[in-house]
Image 1: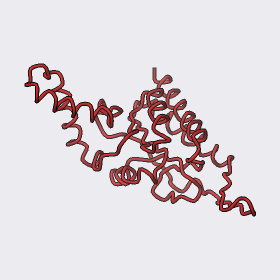
Image 2: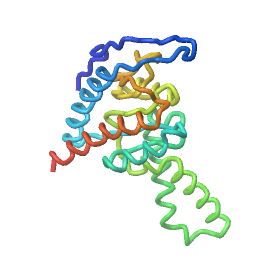
Image 3: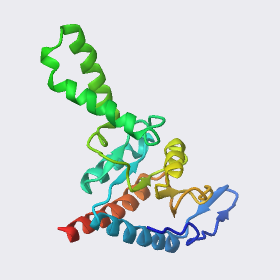
Amino acid sequence: MNLNTNLINYEKLTMNTNNLKNYSIINLEKTFFSLKLCGKILKKLANQKKNIIFIGTKKLHSFIIKFCAKKSKSYYIHKKWLGGLLTNWNTTKKQFDLIIKKKVLINTLLKKEQIILNKKIKNITKNFEGILNLKTLPDLAIFSDSFKDKLALEECNTLGIPVISLINNNSNSQKITYPIITNNESFIFIFYSLLYLTNKIKEGYQAYL
């Protein structure tokens, strides 16, 4: 899919008063426009059965990322980003698959080996439960905060994976294919923005069926 990174130019507005200093005003019309644009892209990708991943490891965002990904039957990373997770995907996937296979044989192992393996399984499940069934690289990544997860963003850029990200209006959007300006410190803003995108993914899958 040919994605144009220069479709949306956001105007930065600031408000300075005696009581309020350096607050940013969000242009909700532009936010809604970019949400609609991203929604159309996601609906089309879902209709084509493409792999979509939600990424957001900030504590405030973790619950929302998991909720939206599960609701839309997408993949997700919500706890921790492992460096090289995507750029070394074949190696990462082999390691995950190997531990999962060993889990089936856990009762045949010695007690000490069982303890070690259980610890590895618990760690992987906790941090990477949302991608254990991912077979290939994602076709698009949705970030709740690409600044917080800049390592993941860099890997997506390196691999040419298109990115949708919620950003503040003072953030650098050059590395983001489709930025959505919002207040990504607000649980409500994040939740309803990602929920809108989630529903568009669901619409795409339903159209496929």
